[in-house]
Length: 264
Image (cartoon, rainbow, N blue to C red; front, side, top):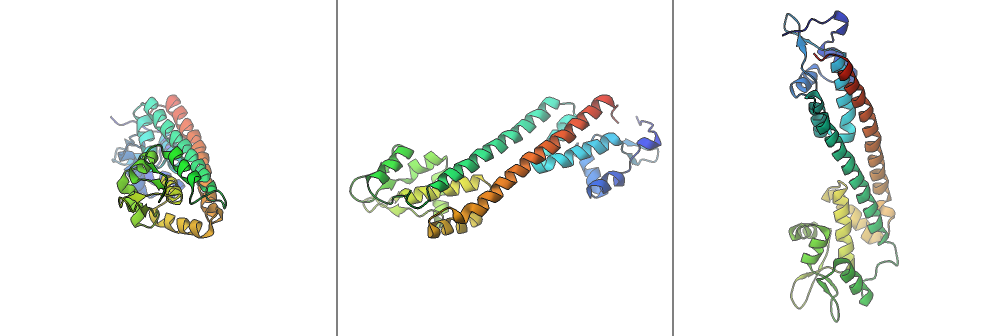
């Protein structure tokens, strides 16, 4: 059943699209995807949007930078289906992921502090005890090479051994070989590189982006080559946090409008 709309309430697809630099087809697609509530139709079959639809589009566009397109779309669909609890759960997940990413960045910075001159020791009992203390079993000490094998290292990092072998093929991690067994043996430098690659991958960096960073760190022996990347990472996390605030404000405005204005 079509609703009669006052002319002042009627908005065309182009009216919504123009504000956000979108195409009219994109607006129609958002409606079909449930991101916008269903629109009423004029007697001639044209979509008749309302300020409620405009508020929904504002909320969605504001949510995307902080939560990503998929999560933002899921949030809007939940709201339009009157499933506010599900929408809030999805938002909580995004905030939890941002917090986890902040912790990851701090972990990267802690890992990089190990790269400062004088903090890494390539040999001796201190080296073996550091490996053993960090990774528990699987450390090799005594005469000959010192380090840890691929299994314990992969388990400690929450990875599959195949991932470490892939990083080795990419030149990101360079384990030695135990002359007695032929097994890969990760000394302190290799463990450090594995931790660094792992943290940068969690931060969203691709292997081809990580490779020059690892090479620069090895050559420079310090943190300076990564300061730009870390600064950029901090900036991106801050921008996401700020975008989440903006998205929350627009979503709250849309929720209030839904509560006070009949739907289409």
